[in-house]
Every structure is written in C-alpha cells, then in structure tokens.
Image 1: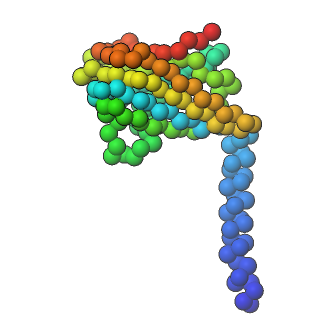
Image 2: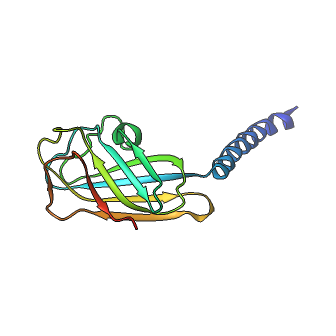
Image 3: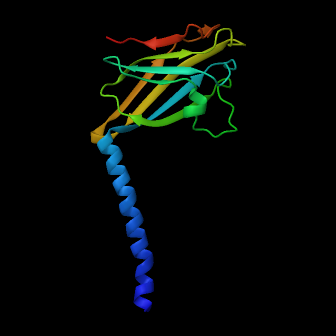
Length: 159
C-alpha cells in the first residue's frame, strides 16, 4: 500500500503535465503568438488609459485594440501608465501574423490629450511557433510633442 501512495503524486504530476502539453501543442497548431509592446514616454504625463493601438504588418494584417491598458496592460491593475520618462509594458496572446509589423498607430478620443505628451519609441516583440521571433522598434521624432491623438499619430512605413 505504501508504494501506491508514493506513486500517486507522481501520477498526478504526469497527468497535469500531459494536460498542459496538450494545451500548448494546440496553441502552436492554432498559430498563437505572444506579443509584448513597450512604450517609452518622454517628459510629460500621457493621456488617459483609453488608447486605441493598431499594429499593422506587411501585407495589411493588423492587431487592433481599443483599450491597450485594459486589454494588454501587464504592470498590474494599480499601475499608472504613461507617466513621464517611463517604460510601460503591454502583453497579449493572439493569432500570429505571417509578417513583421511595419507601422504603429496610436489614437485617443478627440480633445482628450491634456497635457501634451511625448513618445520616444514603441518596441514590439513577437514570439511564436516554428521559430517566430521578431523585434521591431518604432521611433518617434525626439522632442516631438503631441498635442493631439486625434486623428492619430503613427510611425513606420509599410511597403
């Protein structure tokens, strides 16, 4: 009887490990990727948290979120995003895009940006099945003060 009690924890571990391996294999088969976006801000506090971010890939596919902080925010629910001179991290897991990102667009509500805001750069990293490992940095003009996020600001160029 004591041999069976020693085997029970091992058997439980193996069943749980097999379950998670199956889930991971399914996600790879289904073509899911992990995306991480780091927004580096300048010397002024940014807008409210209701920003729309569109990451467009070569060929026209995109990832679109209407509330990047709520949907992607990775720094905890009590974190204040877009403080002066900060690096804010956003993460999500969604379908893999076949190609690398070529443009980023950030948009807020009309008249929402008070006070003025600076973005130094936005870096996007992609990790996924089959060796997908991409990294792209969008650089906004240094000391470029955004007085509005309507209709939107962007960086990058798609062919």
